[in-house]
Amino acid sequence: MSQVLVPTLPSFDCRLLTAVQKLVPRSEREQWLRAWQAELWHVHHDDRQSRLQAATIMIDLAIGLVRDALWLRTEDWRKAFSGTAVLCLGTLASLILLCTLIDLALVGGAHSLWVYIRMPILRCLVAAPLVLFVSLATGLRRHAGRSSARNRGLQWKQALFFPAKVIQIMVVALLLSVALCFPLHTFFPYSVELLQILCFVLSTLAGMRWAIRDQELRCKECLRSLAMPAQVGRPSHNLLEWNGIELSCKQGHGLLSIPEMETSWRRSSEWVEMSIADTK
Ligand SMILES: [Zn+2]
Image 1 (cartoon, rainbow, N blue to C red):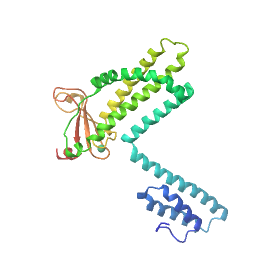
Image 2 (tube, rainbow, N blue to C red):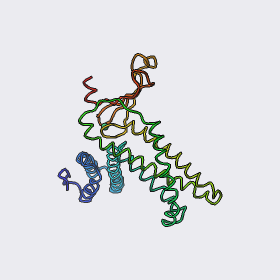
Image 3 (spheres, helix red, strand yellow):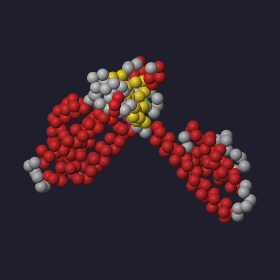
Image 4 (cartoon, helix red, strand yellow):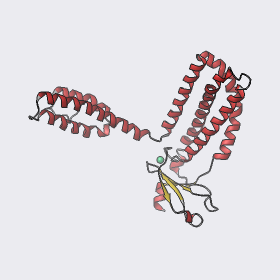
């Protein structure tokens, strides 16, 4: 039992707090315990209440402290995973699982799905390099920025994150195209293959457009999504001064400046590490 538990509380309250406190993040556990001990102590030492009223309040407090602990835990997870690369890859993996379940339900089993999906996989493998080339050639932009040892040491994370995201997007596009075109097999037996590959290409192009945009708007160090967009400058500043949007990393690693329009002196967005930005 935690050292901050007050011995004057009834044993049921102590056991309840001891059990529920495990849900609370460690950094906030002591403060949470002290607050709820005070609430419980007040209920047990308020002589104006009848036993029935005290019991009703105790039930409400028990529900309240569990909900409070759950909220603190989910808020802690939200802060920890919001905008992270892990959440992005996990969401795409969930989409793959959902599409697989839909395909399994439509086709009627794992063996039937494997027999059916072999040809679509081969067709998509032929189309994928072309779709990738077009997407990267038209969508990828270079960032001007200052590199540092801190960034160079973490380049492997970006080197793995983007290809993993692209592979997952292609798998989702394949499974989605199969799910959309399988019911059409009965009505259009000769053209459904063309429809399937067309569906794959369009889905992958849309997914790649999102992936490239998402990659641009992530911190170049921790790969979290950049936040707090701020408009800097005015439209009349386009030619002579800075006009655009600045986004920053919540962890304080740096900020990304995106010009409103491309000019001869600023053709691309610029990533500036916070330590460098502070000394400018
Ligand atoms: Zn960051």
